[in-house]
Length: 363
Image (cartoon, rainbow, N blue to C red; front, side):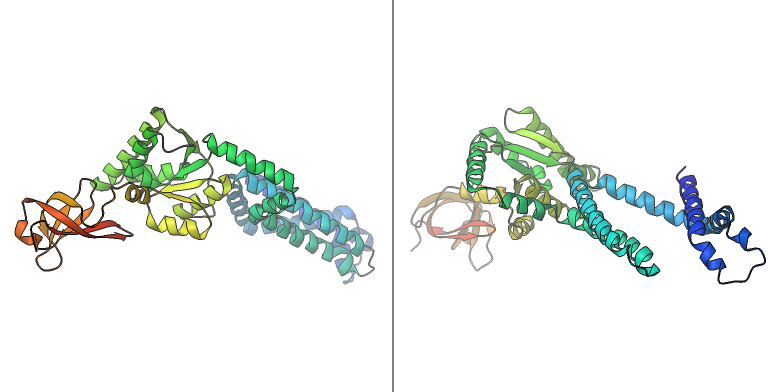
């Protein structure tokens, strides 16, 4: 059906151009029958035949281009299309005003060809500006609000946050990790938990992986989401919003957080850095886990089990229940034994907290 429409469009275009331009072209040659070649029916049929011949070469590329445009438009967010359409209308309006002024020119090129070029160029630029600069346009509109309105909006935002309406967008890693469900059940995680459809798709691909470890992680993530939906805690919102022009899931999460005015919940170190560069707030589960670990001070005694050698000579390694590593001086001689140690220093690193200690009775 689409091919027929394209072919019919070529015929109509060819007939129209034939009526407009073929008489002028025929004037350049000598013909025995001037009335016949100046007949509009003859010129229309001639132009239509000429463009019909072009359909054999151009129909398939035009149909493919239309289908490509259709896929892009259907995959674009509705607000992007709305602002793109507004930009297109503005561009065409400016082109109409310019073409109206150029139409009074006696030069054929200026009066007939330039207006068409202006319509195409300004229409395209208007759509692109509206489509790609949507966030900047919204910020520009918000910037002209009166101070009282800003104050009111700020109070409403604070009130909304106290009622738990801040959007917290979950990424794939934090869902697979599972600790977010435990935090949610305690009541410390307020607001609305947002799970984008593209995160669900990635999680499903992991669950369907041929690798047994990845498959287990993916299924665990799906179980965590089911648990979040069933427990009495924050509401879980599944959103279909996507960004077709962005391929990376991390960047999609950042764009979605900016669009919804929410936070990103993750335990991915790289996503944490990317979000910070874009000015998006992040709740890092690993940072929370490190923050709630028991405070240990030098001189405190602990009872630990040395389980293996350390990197340095005669060192032993032990662990607390929360996974904190304890490096015990001369602990190599106590491997497999439970001993009392005295904390000598505590080191906080990006990977977590590390405790240095020595046996209690050592000198």
